[in-house]
Length: 299
Image 1 (tube, helix red, strand yellow):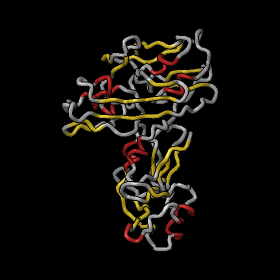
Image 2: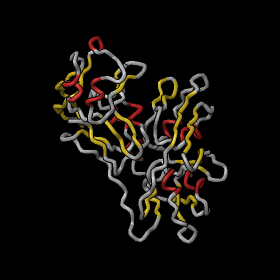
Image 3: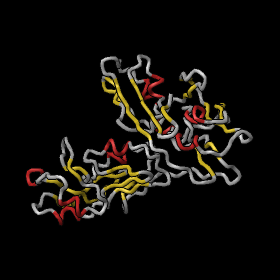
């Protein structure tokens, strides 16, 4: 009973990768590779350092029987490449610095499931992912789904034809109520954060159908009639704990409810990276650095 990721909905934001304590999830291009708890590693280990264990976990309010991989570090040789890794069908087991030195086995902690900002992770045979990908309208070449847009203005930055503007809407963000999100948007001209609800809208007469907007949209709010290429990106989130005053404004504007405040803000290592938290911080304690392979760095 491994975890299950709905790739049709997945934002490829890697929040689950950052949350996993054992490195059991890894992004590979447009796929999310992860431990499937098959037990091949345990069977291959000559020292019995790995074992498939039965476990009871409470999932969605009900107790479920699941399986996980248990690791005994004192029995592990910790040599690279590990023998277990050579037998892993997912090719995800490896030795790295830090604890645990062996990475790539699922302990069924479900932090990935709890972290995913759009509920695209479930447990196979126990609970299905709750996410639903937006359905692209047949009469549109490129379309912005208002209920998915957070008004970050990335699309406005990259559009080569100035075909996108932000407009007011009464349609709520699809996670607004669940995450207690305070609606904000980015002024495309000043890049300052404003209160209120505005979303991107495409001028079909100007749009060239290049899908660059869809490629950089951090929340998957833009779809196209043809396949959208996956554009690799680098994300680096930083919090200056000396500067942070713990006001919690960043948490209020995070659409994914991914930021915790305990004295100082705890911004995840990886996330959709829409930069709303950075723009909201009154003391400039947060930096979200996002660079796409072809579109460049988001301002």
